[in-house]
Every structure is written in structure tokens, then in C-alpha cells.
Length: 252
Image (cartoon, rainbow, N blue to C red):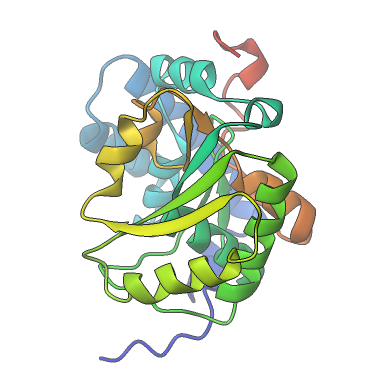
């Protein structure tokens, strides 16, 4: 079946699954799952236990999984997170699809999740294929504007080569920053995660991917900055509201 979506908006069931009345149950589930992960439980079994206990639908369980993490992972992520002031003079390495789809979802009224380490994540799923939507160009313009504010030495977007239409998005990204005075490039990689997990000194990952955050030496939390400044009407669900705040975690 052809993908005829024009927006990165919410799933038809999201209005009920992620309504404010559902937030307390989701927040309790993130707390429970984070507690289990902190004590060495495997993610699949811990998520099943948590989801069954809280009577969560499959889509809600996915949201909880994307928002939770164990205490050790949280401490590690916060320790390696860089501030906006630390970006100047360094190169941003952007997890392209990860960032673009989140901003697209914010613009289209999709569900946004604020995770335990402060990352913003969406509920979009590409299934190996990316389709440009009405929000794509506005999203790229917003991202460009915020990156200019940070004054990096350069900016390199990494896109998954195996994903359908990744080449088209790559060209759009290049066009969006073609007149910038600092380096702005976009390239296709067979597996961007491998590159982002092992960056040399002077490079900073821009991503909300948990697997990358748990290994990369430096990362910057860009998506929440963009959404707060450019899409203030988008209200992320504070999924980790019942977990200890970041200020009480080691390495903050």
C-alpha cells in the first residue's frame, strides 16, 4: 500500500492512549521500568511486567520503553551531555532521521515524550522508508536557525543509506544550509549509529537514541530547545515525572 501521509501527526488511537488522564499511569510505568532496569532486569521481560501491571496498550508500552532508563545509564548520559556553551568551536554530528522526525512530529501535533534524561522523542515509525511531509522544510529551517545560534565549527548530518528516500532528504538538508559560513554537510552512512557511538574528540552527537547516548563521548540535547522556542504549543508528556529529577542524579 502506498504511503500517502502528508503530515507526521498522531496515530488515530493517540488521542485516548496519551490523553492527560493517561499520564499518571504512563509516569508510574516509566518509574517502575526504570527501577527494574536499574536492578539488572532485561528490558523485554521488565517491560512486559510493567505493561501488564499497568494494563498498557502496545503503543503505550513503546512510549514507556523509549522514556525509561536505569540509574547507571542515566548517570552516564548526564555526565556526557554538553551545554550550549560547550558547542562553540566543535562539530555537531547529527542523527538525521532522529532529529528531523521529532521536529516534524512537534509541528504536526504528534505525541512527544520527555524522557528521564531530558531527551525529546516522538512516536513516529518509518519502517525502513522515509517520506517527506508538509513539516519537513519548516523543521529544517528551525533546526538550521538553532544551530546557527550555537556557533559550531561545523555541522554534519548522518542519514541511513538503507532507508528509502534518504538521498532526497540528504539533498534537502544540503540546500537548507548551502549559504552558511560554517561547514554544513549531509552524507549517507550504512549505519550512522556506529559512527555516532565512537566520535573523536571535538565532535558532538545530536541524538535522542538511547543506544548512542549510552556510548558516545559527548552529546547535545537539541530537540527540546527547538520545540520550546519554535513550537511552544507542543506540550511533551513528562514521562519521568515520578523518577528522581536530573539534579539529584550523579554527574549532572
